[in-house]
Image (tube, rainbow, N blue to C red):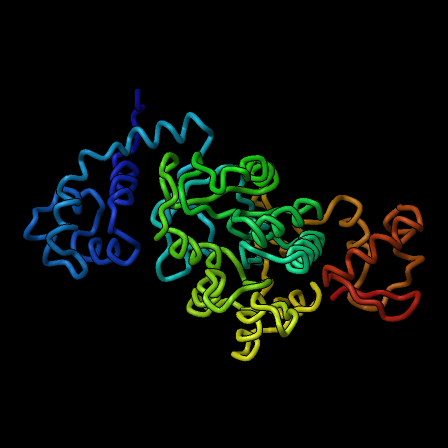
Length: 370
């Protein structure tokens, strides 16, 4: 039996379940009626006067009371799925800033402050071995640099990106077109569990809703909306990955593309993106250098002092070594002494900090904070 839920939450979920009420139509409805409850209680004539609401959609809204929003919420609660509204603190900040964010977001796993430093990797479902290798390599490198990898859990490039991020010991977010209890493709059920354990599964569809064909392009705006930039690895001329880059452009996100063989059909989309001004990606440094100015301070998970996004990803040893380095050139021997760590561990940690753009090498024996 469904539990007792906040009336506003129930109304938001019920409104989101109406076929034909997308983010823009919802915005028009709220501009007229101000609250989801008022939308659901409005009369047919009132609804039909709203831009984008014809007689058929008005009829669906009038019949929305038959939709079991409480049942979906109870199912989510039972299966450990969080339900986030767009004005709640836990809702991803970057996603909230786009012009058409999902009103309701279902999440399984954990969303962390460090996920604000995220990059999407997308591409063909029919990827070649070359494409799969590049996607996994880039995702692993981003993960090791403390960047969260976002993708769509699809076959091909998406799956390689999620696996690469997990292999790199990092975090990854997967945005689904259907409900979180209707994993698609079904053979990615284990991968979905791995993503939830190392990041989060996300969807704007209620948990039990199967993926509909029209939902895939719509979910692409969420993939780009969660990210600072989108990397395309293999895409044909009309690939869905290119839709994601269109959303990225509209949202003010960076666009990246990995070049491929000039005679490969799956390279055409990437090469066209490069002609249109996307940044060429040969290795992970190309992404990190471009995103450097976009990195900003975010709160630590415990609500304490502000730290940079990269610093949130540092382990205890990396923190100690970083704190031992000044903005002015610092001798490596002084870093060893101040951090109290063994020389070989300090040297290895310096390489990690340099890769994460937190320090720079001045000479063979001198380092400085950036």
